[in-house]
Image (cartoon, rainbow, N blue to C red; front, side):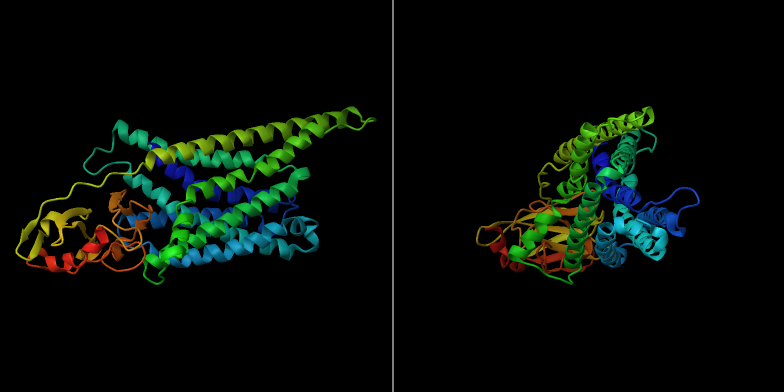
Length: 424
């Protein structure tokens, strides 16, 4: 339950805050006094959610076996619209003030916001939706208490993100709009960082781009800071929180105010203070939920014990049957120079095999483990693209030459001996 809750909360919080920020900054008029583009942002959200559901279903049914098919162009679109959104948010006050005098500007702003919301939602939600496929373990009945608990975690995670965003929406008071605008701009700026980092990681996994040394370590540091950056998107609303508190405590009715003005000032004071306090509660609650939840779900795992295999003369032999389940299999080998080594074998999509050392050129011999259908580096916590196992580059495990025929995978021990330096 906790894993589903944390994953759903982290995945939906950023899009939720983006939607709320746009709603506060770009909504104008009431009733008929509203622009033609008033529903475009809502359409963008709906299209993003619907497309995410369709894509998740295609991934579940293996119609699409590579997420990069969508993610590469989608991340490029996310970054482009993120940058445009920085301009839209910065100019939101000018765009919405007397918008009837320049309606085209507001239509363009709503169009950019709709496209950005759709792209960000489509990128973030498939992984959240795919959690539903992990609610029931293979071979288990779908109607169990465990299934209900995991489903509850998934629903609560989404509900918490939406509730936190709705609470932030209460800070829309005109008197603190400048501070809300700064917070919303920071939300979009952090999206730029997150999406750009994910794009670079994807290009590395696809072997289009290669980074080593300090640039690679810097990239991984940002990549592993996804949760702190997501929390930062909520934390930036401390600015309007403080502004709202100051407004609430300083709000006073004029000395000659009538009863209506006194009631209006009193209502403003109550709203400003209560909104600030509730958003503060939401910020603290989400921060605790994510930090504690992530620390529990990301406990460093121990590597699985090496499996047995046939080692004769100068060859190591592993049967197809032994690795046919598509999961990671680990094997131990002692090189001629006495070095204790490990290598892994995994059956990839299409029947190919990934045979590699349980080590990489960047993170050394930390090893890899399997979690949630992903192969993850134990040291840098990067999920390895299954299709690239057996190829050089990035945090991919170092490939080992092999042959596959007659129902066996055959590895020459001389090839393993030549790679022993990676375990010293």
